[in-house]
Length: 495
Image 1 (cartoon, helix red, strand yellow):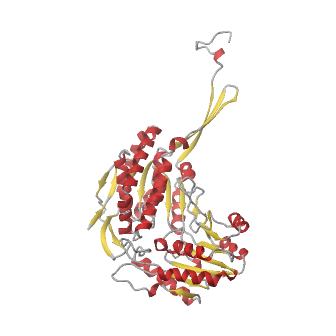
Image 2 (spheres, rainbow, N blue to C red; image 1 turned 60 degrees about the vertical axis):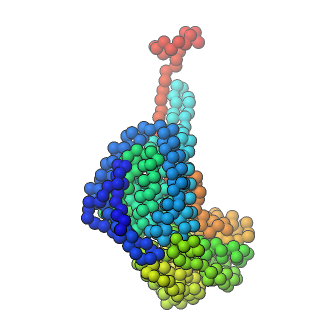
């Protein structure tokens, strides 16, 4: 069985806490690994290594940091298949989704390769007589990332490239459910030439998280996960004087207007709701059918679900893989029953699919005639369940988004440019899609939601990521007029 330890000061370090956690292959239900869970001492060792490395890394030239980042980009690109295979083995997502995850992570490394341009300061010459004013940005020190199971390679790459490129050192605490992809990308960073201690990985659970949140040498914490944990991370780290960005849960709505291309909308709904088995914070959870489009939309989605191939991620024919754990499988199945019990119409019941073996599989489900008081609407299910809510007007549809506690992403499908322009202004969400179901920004913009989908005021990666991992400094300087200087600078006395 694979033993998974920590990466501290550039080397693999065996766990000493005697506490472990199983790692499974979700497609078979078989335990394939045993993860060492860090104790407080191991977290402290990782932070100490990062702190010791910071002084020299912050002074490394922009040219050196950029060269190392380019080398890292090349290694991740050349090892994309290996990272994707690790994703499939421990998360379960199909190969196409896994490769897509690596590609989106790679975008963030490429963005960080341009750090020399992004760290250029501002200068005002002669702000007053003989006075110049300059603004610069400097690294924070040791920063930490706590990342979720659903994107175990991409989300760390939302954080690590910008943090390192701006001169910080990093301690990563990946999900204990699928830690190998994060370990692999950290090992590639060592191979790329990042000095020992610049990037460390401590595997663990709440013990490790809590220590990072209060450690006096950790200056900032980045987090992606569920809303309750995001709030806990934000409150705890903030109370301990740390800068925090905490991205949380979602209930993303996709509005379909009567004039929409129904085939396009149905294709989008299926890919957005069931890709990665629905285990993503940008998944479409609610399709809002406006007016008389409901029947044709539901029928079109059902036809596509019937053709959806669910199977092991390493099977090239599979289009959707298993859920991450048996508990997740049971929890999502229970939500389907709750919807039926509340009076919704279960058009496609994923529990009816039969699968060989002991994998954590559940078929895609479509639930129609859902109302806002039902648990399938209120809760973040985080699985392959799509609810359909029917309303009479655009205004009612937008009001659903406005009154929902989350505000991560929202989409509209329409041929009407006027409606689309109204929607991009009126929808209360941080990321908006127009005929695009999952509007995840490219790496040179930033990712983050509104309301209970984000704690703190800084979103992830892109320009906001650079701002988060740096602090501003303004320098005001006065120099004497060369003509009156007591030092002979070679100027003519009559100049």
